[in-house]
Image (cartoon, rainbow, N blue to C red; front, side, top):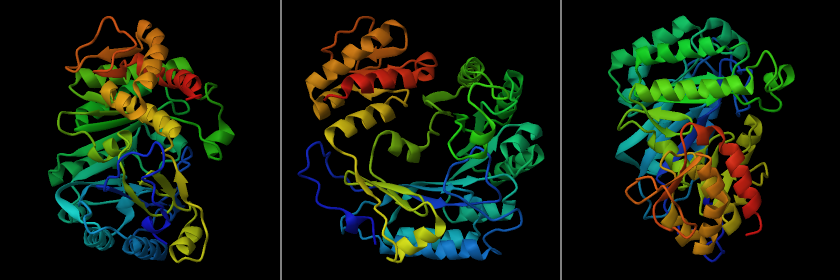
Length: 425
């Protein structure tokens, strides 16, 4: 079973975009020391003492993952990958040899461009300097460190496996390697987290001074421990007003410190935007490999089984799993283009919208957005990214975006209005 073998010819289907050769690949490494209490990702827990060198579970998974990659059928004119992303889970639980095995096969099967961005998520306490240097020597050139907060009590309440001391140890190791392109993650809205806690974490982060920062607001997902313990907006979770203050405070402190708020949850210094994630937000095609991973190829979203044994059986052709969903009908493509594009600070290109979905559709979108523009939640820009003071619905050149931070904070409300009024298209 391969990504390509289950696809049909979709070029003739209405609303289908021009076919592109994917230049990005996501590889899911599902293993964690323990499952965080807010996590609903496809992960497998190995315990605090297991890692790629001593875990039969990880060794078996790497074997099957490589088997899936080897089965991927590609055309002769494939473009080499410009981004490769190892996510999880905790990819830093892999051994250097295991990562080398996977990367070599990806390069052999799909090709990796010499200047490709190769990212890897890592957790404090799961690597030392020798191991991290080994990853870098293989071509990894971007690191994303999962920190979340700088208070041990909150780390424990979230079910994280590391301590604050291990965070600083991990940062020290990263700095010693000399890698410049690295990111640090924080999460707001945790139980018992105060605005003062959040400000301390932000200011501590700024002292560390990474070139990229991801800021996530807690979402209480179904079937997680948090969903059993807590109700959004009720104590001990912060109120909606407090989480909005946390978002505004992050935006204020980080932009004042020279970070560009280029996506609703992400900040970067010039030249350090995550190129792989931009592929998702700009709705470009990509490969996905591993348990629970998704691909987006030829208008189809292909999602693998989330359970390890079912994923193994699927790769070996012993388990039927309907992973293919055609998502590029005109209606779905429009809504997904709006949802993803409005995550970016640059917003959406009006000329592109007019060409892809018709001038009439663009006019309807602008008409719906004008009340939000009048409230200061939406901005219209000309082709030079200068802000228009007066906007006519027939405008078809320039850009439309949510304002920062107010529009971003109310993005769900704006999108819900758009989707409801565009549902009959």
